[in-house]
Length: 117
Image (tube, rainbow, N blue to C red; front, side, top):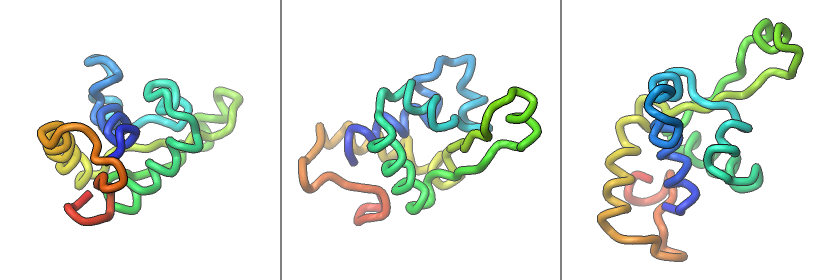
């Protein structure tokens, strides 16, 4: 699992957003620009990681309602949040990665591949 994926999972678990927002992050999720600002990841890194997590069943994505965006005079936002599967699997995966030490270079685990990631 890459360091970027680990950071993204920590954010989607509400661990990097402050305790006051944790419930909101877990229930509503975060939109792309929020994720980019919190993680520090550029779009070219962030969105491929989100897509890998989505394909593995760990992340769900959805568009906000038109009325909300129109009321604020902006385009709709696409939100990302952990799925039930991701909310259950991510904490254990992060603990396992931490226990195994740092990244293993080219042999790092990735969502959807061997080991359930």
